[in-house]
Each structure stands twice: as C-alpha cells, then as structure tokens.
Length: 174
Image 1 (cartoon, rainbow, N blue to C red):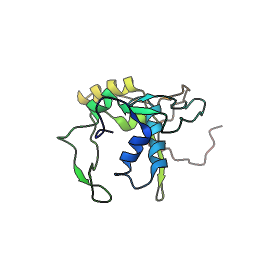
Image 2 (tube, rainbow, N blue to C red):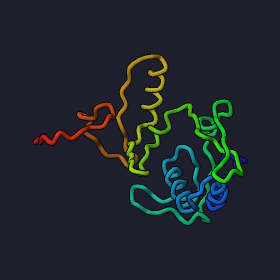
Image 3 (cartoon, helix red, strand yellow):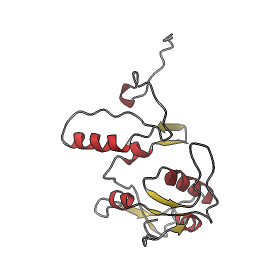
Image 4 (cartoon, helix red, strand yellow):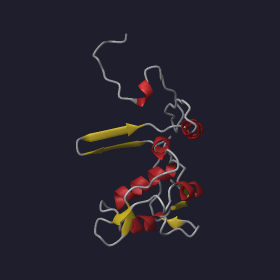
C-alpha cells in the first residue's frame, strides 16, 4: 500500500493484486488480513462496506471496497532510516524484513494465529493507555497496561500476571 500511496483510495482488489508480488500465499489470505486491519480503524482508512466485527457481517467483495493508508500509518510505520530491506520470496522486489514502529502496534492491534506447532493470542490494548504507558516507559517510570476489547466487554484482571502465561496447576479456585 505504501508503494501505491498517492493519497487517494484504491480498490482493495488492486491492493491485493499488488501485494501478491510480496506474499506467496494467495489473494484470499491477503484480503482477509487487509479486511481485519481495516476493521481495526488504525492503519487503514476504509471506504465502503467493510463488515462489522460486532455482528459478524462480512465485508463486501474486494472489487467494491476501497482503502488507503491512514495518516497514522504513514507517520508511524514507515521509516527508511530504520527499515532493513531484502528481496521478496521470488527475488523480483525489495521488501522490508521488519517494520520498526514508533508505537507498540502489536499491543494496539492484537494478534491471533497459528504456525508450525505454535499458536499466539495477544489481546488488543487501548490506544490512549498505550500512549500513556509509552511516555512513562520513555521516562523510566513504572506503568501497567491491560487488554481492551474492540466490542466492549469486561475482564477480571486479578490474575492477569502482567500478561505472562498463566499455568493451570489443576487446583480448583471454587
């Protein structure tokens, strides 16, 4: 999307096609990832029917919806001075090895997925609380952050353990 960026919205089908130059797994997984990111309303500005995570409604077909990088994404996610580049999977293009961020994006967006024998589930955190925690961290002060939920909801954080894995000891808490 950065390569395509001219400030205007692009059809998601075109974004998916351009992304396939960098991603060998096909259009469906790219489209799903793009819709997921667009629904979180942080990195991608959307236009059209992008579905609704609260109701489970799916987004319209990629040929009907449009997107562009948000001003936040352009400011936070792209820094030529700190980004390491390598050849893409087929050796035709240069792509970032990682995208060093000026913001704890993984905590803001959350993540869920599986890979070879591994799984992850990182709950999203509140944007404003992450900003406050980042400032405290940079000043060397202690901070506490807890997950947040896009659709609302509440959580008992009394056993949160600072986000570290909680091991079930087999003892009942009842």
